[in-house]
Amino acid sequence: MNLNEYQKLAQRTANPKLDKEKKLINAALGLGGESGEVQDVIKKHLAQGHALNVEKIVDEAGDVLWYLAELAEVLGTTLDEIAAHNIKKLTQRYPEGFSTERSVNRE
Image 1: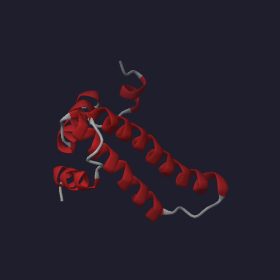
Image 2 (image 1 turned 90 degrees about the vertical axis):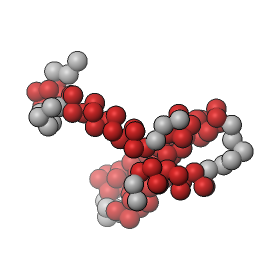
Image 3 (image 1 turned 180 degrees about the vertical axis):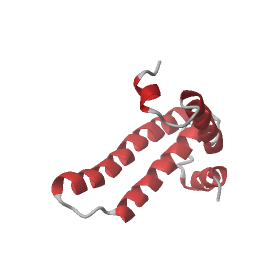
């Protein structure tokens, strides 16, 4: 499955009653909430002695991806386009791959 196929399938479970503004709010708040759930699992591992629950992180990361798909849909773009844009930006920022020097002295 590619990202655009995922986006299309994920939209089958989006609330069709939401207008564009409410979909945007849902996507933004959902991203924050689900990202927080990923953070919470890692916090429990690093600060509270829990075993690293990889399955739970994967589950919550999937929810993050769902909300990214919702955001892409509302913006009239695709996950593939977002991914390609991000790679272009990173390639310009780090043409030879990551370097601490370029990171520290970034414009």
